Amino acid sequence: MSRKIALHPSTLRHLLLAGAEREVTLVNGVLTIAFTFYASLYISIFVGIGVAAAGLAAQFAARIAGKKDPMGLKVYKRHIHYQRFYPAAAHPDAPYPVVKG
Image (tube, rainbow, N blue to C red; front, side, top):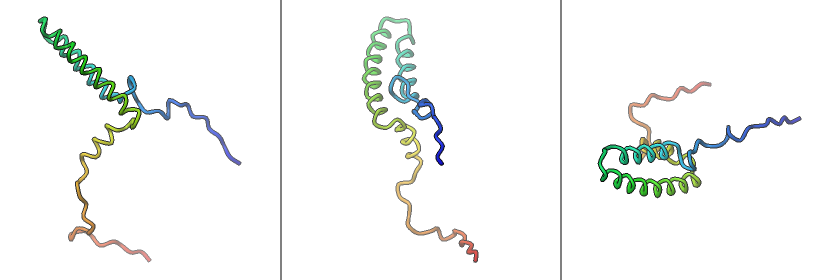
């Protein structure tokens, strides 16, 4: 006898904002707003427009990356903490395994 449990699709989907990962989208938006409204000079508005154009390109690239791998940034952050090479031998000071039997 098998049981079927209905799962709502929102419990299975990854957390994406505007098609990209949340962190990337929020940093992109905050940087755009900060560069646009940081100074009350006219030059800051032009710099903000340039940053917004670059931000749109970055958001487009982040959406493509989000479709390929929705957890790519989290995987990359975890990957940074790993060593480059793990030797195939145990450490000389490692404790001996306990054999039960």
